[in-house]
Amino acid sequence: MPLTCGCGYDWEPGQLICYGGEDFEPLLTSRRKRCRSCKELIEIRALCVKFEIYKIPEHEVEINIHGEDGEIRMAPRYLCEKCGEIYLNLKAVGFRCVWVEENMAELLREYQEIYKPSKLST
Image (cartoon, rainbow, N blue to C red):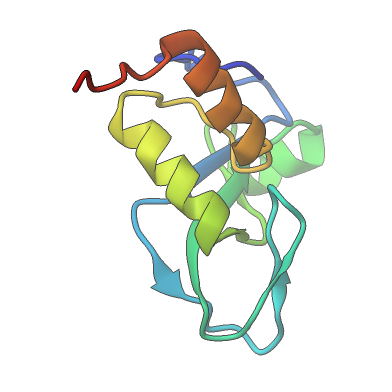
């Protein structure tokens, strides 16, 4: 998905939604986790960015259990420190719809190509 400053909020059945991703925190799980962007393993206690993931109910059984407006909690997802830094910086400059599973290095290259940070003249 290309960089965008806004996103629609018309949730569809089966769609995933993520919350969190506000800052770095140590990985406090019993096992290492894989970065959802670059696929590198994140060591236990290493800094990462954590996202809580929920799914919009899509089947009648899910709707009966969680309600039509309910959300089904899924396993959290993580970005390593390197990818998390790119994510947080893109978010800081106004990109609100960066999905945790996107390739952060590619998004950074796209940002640099589009916005070409001005060079300081000496």
